[in-house]
Image (spheres, rainbow, N blue to C red):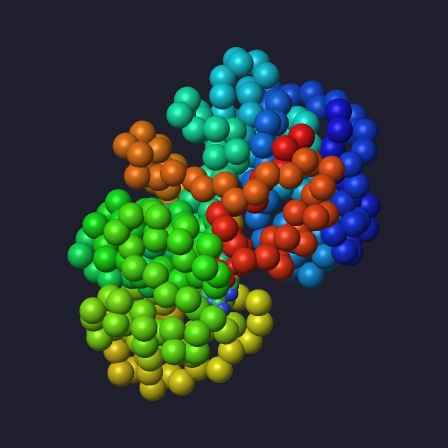
Length: 311
Ligand code: NAP
């Protein structure tokens, strides 16, 4: 089979499409014929060799995908893989293979894994968001951000979402009754409060804490919570801002979620897919051989939904 292999950590071009040995499932492992692969930012950090946990070399990147269970013929999406999903086939534990509803394309199925589990965990399991509260999705135009907006709207939260391009703002606004702000503007948090019609946010789901955490703390409602989902460096904060609101900063990393937490998240995803409140948005599809271009686009472009690779 064809698979992307990484033999040394480095630039995107270290990802090479090559012939790899066929995979043989052992015991209850599931062999999936991949139709679409979700690209996540963490895969760019790992490939460059700067992440806290690195796989032994050589390896095939990827955890999210959708395709066909070879044994049963069922359409499935995959949220983790033993062999890596940037390939024509992947081996998975059965608990990481979920039924893909007919109304979703394979690309949409590949967009579910990390983004929707992260969004659910950030909003509800860490952020404790409740119906009627006001949430700022700080970075709403990407895979995690759009999933967060959709979950928040479905749960009856009042939502403001930010993006850094005109197209991104339109995409966020198209998710439903959500107000939008351009995070390129220096006064964007004041505008976000205006849009919310509230003096502070109950929950902020933050995709770029290194840029925004200091200002986030100053726009929390009493008892407000900032959930740090993404950060690319250090940041200064004034603890007095937290004191003023009895606020809290909560970190989250998806691999810390327990099996019970993940079961809860996938149940919620199943309900949302069935009732139509969750609708993964695909921004771009590229052939698997163009994985290096995909990694560059993911870090450089304005986000417009999910980037997927097609084998
Ligand atoms: P993505 O699709 O590339 O989206 C990135 C998002 O960040 C876009 O909405 C982008 O908006 C936004 N952004 C860029 N500059 C920003 C700024 N100054 N202020 C606020 N937002 C800004 O990536 P993703 O898959 O959604 O992941 C988002 C982040 O979460 C990444 O850092 C990723 O590593 C992290 N993540 C963490 C976990 C975890 O377990 N903690 C799990 C999954 C992902 P524009 O492009 O429109 O400017």
